[in-house]
Image (cartoon, rainbow, N blue to C red; front, side):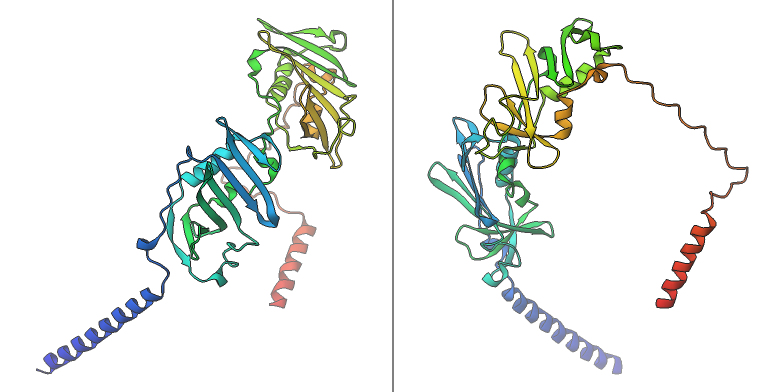
Length: 355
């Protein structure tokens, strides 16, 4: 009988405990941000987007426009756009999925980097119609913080997306100087203070047309390596718009590389100019085009080879003799020098005394 009374008492306590937890959960839910049923729906067709306006912090503004089926940078200048980076941005918009509401009060904007000073503003348009206006903030816990259109809430979008828009102007421009199939190049000619060398593709490899007297042990494979650099040459940056050809050292180039392709195509001539104000960079231009590029010292050196570049490389030195094997049963690893061991032991003792 006593057990039954206790069971009733225990049941009553459990009932009221569950009731309290239920009321607390309901109240807590009411205090939480908007539920999933109230999330904004964003469906962007990347094929319908005709322009992207991107404003980074510090008011760096770039406009990308689809002009006749080709994406270009149209503000602050007119230039070919980097296809890969534009495609990445469009894909992130097309894949945009809003997962939840992260915050509802404006005082959280700065912390989540969706305020005017920190966010990357992206406006996607189809013609004159605005498809979406996004304030892209920080990334955390698998989500990117967003403010969408006129909503005051901060939403969490699945995945990372800020990286696809937070780019310098130079990253939106096409930095590819030359993009041809190396197999279609029939002749290549290097001219610089290091010498003049011209090679022609033959059925059995490369033949020297110019500079033979300077080559003691010609290795055709070395031509292929230099050709690969010239045929797929990508700049690291662009010269400032007010940089003249004379200032860039291109009125009298210090080196030229000429590629002749199969068919009647016009030869490609690369002109290497002077050093930039930054260390280990040089100006470069593709002859007949207005754009002045900036390339690294490493690439510049590959475009002005000397005779030794095209010679058979020396055989690498023989490896050192192998260390004697450990004695049977396992051996000790080489010991540290006694003075090093003493220093380590002294440091350990000092740390222990300080604890």
